[in-house]
Image (tube, one colour):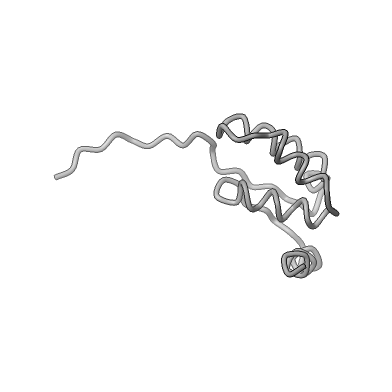
Length: 88
């Protein structure tokens, strides 16, 4: 028998649909800053990284930091571009 305390995550699981209004890069950056604060990360640093490249670069950076907490829904075209951007 094991005695366990229920685990309450710092951040609830979020689903973000990038195919609509939620896909705006500024919405993504805003969410990154909120999640950074909740997780004790440097939100300003992450924001600067997200703003250095194009949209696909920003999405990949967001996913690298917050992929464990946020599920990103994308179209087939965006998925292909994200794959290409990772290779660069």
